Image (cartoon, rainbow, N blue to C red):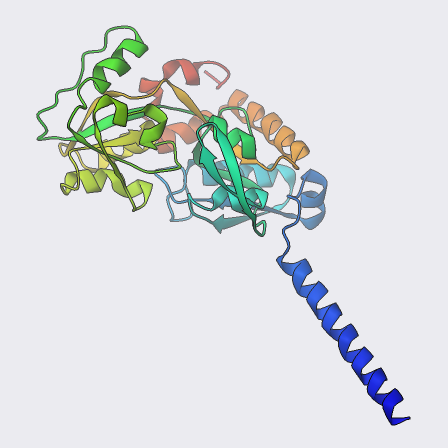
Length: 305
């Protein structure tokens, strides 16, 4: 009888251990990203964002913050902002942490999913499209070379052909220090700047801190994308100057997990609607008024003009 009780106690303890382990495993294991029906049922849309330029200001507003709030309102669900980082934001969306390898990616590990949509001025790049699906383009961009105002480099004179302008800028880089940030749209590897003779420096701070780093003398030059450059020129007038383009023109989009096709389709329909009724153009004028001058062709078609 005593042995039987010991066996029953042992068996009960073993079952409890297995159950607890399964619960913990289930909590830690990533799940598929939510699609539109699940979000409607849950009644909440989780916006993954990184404070950056005027897309996500960090003060509760920004072009992308307002855009996703309007989308949540359109769906009839609550809006919730989930702060992330450039290093983690796609992993927070997809449940897969990856490392870019040129235009390909290497999956490192699975992690918990924290949000439903990424919107923070995310440039559409080939390697990112391997991980997530993007919306229709929501903003134009380009990578520019930025210098301190006292740099001996002078802005190039546009020659009418973008490829020649890019080559003219790259020709100025030999022996010059250029700041960039790995695994972002400002990764110097994307533009082969080392092969041009530039002394490439990997910046460890935040993207928003690149322009101040140059002003403070961390390097003579930095890469900035257009939205951040426009904000920096307004914020620090007379401190920096644009030398010229480093990349072709690019586009920014909102990112969705590949398991959320209906959510992406719903966003694209919503976005087309607010372009037509003028809501989107009003947001652009609010947060990036000078973008209309730099990229008139992008904003001309289908934006209520």
